Length: 151
Image (cartoon, rainbow, N blue to C red; front, side, top):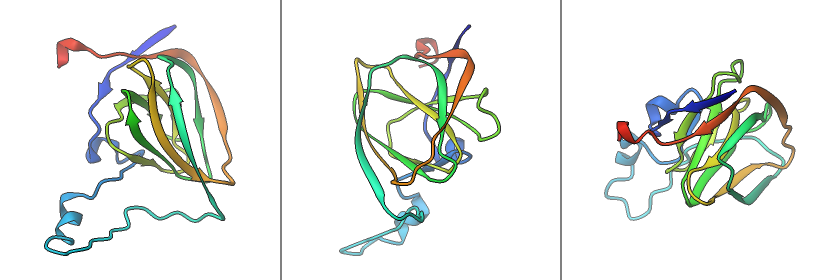
């Protein structure tokens, strides 16, 4: 069975149950106003080491999601039009789709996959070197597509 997901706009409010957008909020940005150098830690995670990767995807469908119960993971778009598929830890069969036009960090235990609306999409990802990965085969195939009537 094919299931199309509406692609949602990535906002702090509608993404907060999955993680955080890696851009300072308006309130956080005010702390650095009028400072010649401003350094703001947006997220902390414990690890014995981190991996940084260049990740390119060209698929438009998925029938599986993965989960890292022990680590956060970042997705930082570089090119193309990536779509981030995410679902809460206890609900892998209820995914949502977001246009990944800003860098994000996923919380531990969030189900996820990435699709591309363009020929391919490239991201930088970061995760800890001791990452554990659990896979879940969905009972349907997800297709991410734009609904031009809603644009």
